[in-house]
Length: 339
Image (cartoon, one colour):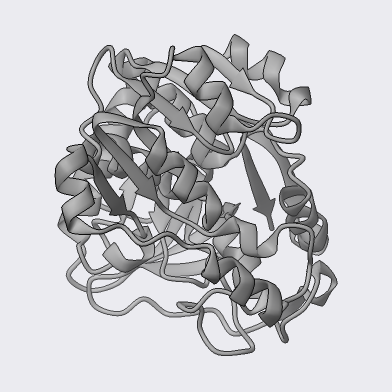
C-alpha cells in the first residue's frame, strides 16, 4: 500500500509518500481500499510537533476515509466485500488501504460519493457533538461559529440551520458571499474587525448562547465574555499556535498557553454560563456513542438536510500542498487526499 508519512516534524514539505505492506483485518475488523481521506487541522499540528496525541515518528495520521471493503475479518456481520463505506480510523488514514472496526465503519447512503463520505466523519461529528449532544443548541438561539469557512465551520453552519438558530461566523472577507449563500446570517471579517465588538453590536449587547471556538487563547476569553445568560462556550482546538508558522515554535506555543483563561466555578455559577471541551480523538473508545451520532448524521444526509462541502482534493503526491492550503486559510469546506 501507499501512505503519506510524516518522517520528521517540520513544514508541509516533510510529507513523503512511501510503500508499506497491506494490513490484514483481524477478528471484528474490515479492510477498506481507500478512495478519499479527510485532512484535518489536527494533522497539521501533528506534522508540526504540536499535537500531544499524535503517534511517534515516523507517523501516518488521518482519522477518516471512504472507499470499498475488500476483505472482512472473522466475526464481522453486516458488511461484505464490495460494500461502499466510510470509516473512522485512529490514525493511519493517509493510506490507500486501512483496517477499521465496525461500528466505526458504516455503509455509505445511496448517492453519497467517496469524497462526501470522507468529508463527513470528523468535521460533522465534531460539530454535532458540540452543538447537539453537549451544547443543546435550540431553535431561536444565537451561535457564534469561528472559522466558519473551514470543515467544522461549514458543518456547524448546516447543523445550526437545521436547528433554526441565528448564526454569526468569523471568516476572511473573501468567503463572506459564499457563506451567506449557505445561510450564514452575520459574517464577521476577523482580519479587520474585533469579533467581540461586532457580536455585541449585532446583538444589541445581548451576546450569544453558544460559541464554537477552535482558535484558543485570548479568543476563548472574548467568547466567554460574549455569553448570554445560559450561554455555553465550546473549545475544541488551538489553531492559534500554528498561525503564521509552518514549523514548531515552543516559544510561540508557550506564549499562547499564557493567554488561556481560567474559568472559576463561582463565576460560572453567578453568570449561569458553561464552558466545555470537545476532542473526538478521545472518544475513540466510545464506539457505540460515535456510531449512534454517525447514524443520526447519515439519516440527515439521506433526507437532504446535510451535505458535506468539499473544497478541493489533492493526490497523495501533493499532500504538502493540501496542508499548505488549509494552513493558509484558503479552504472553504473540506480538503481531501485521494490515492
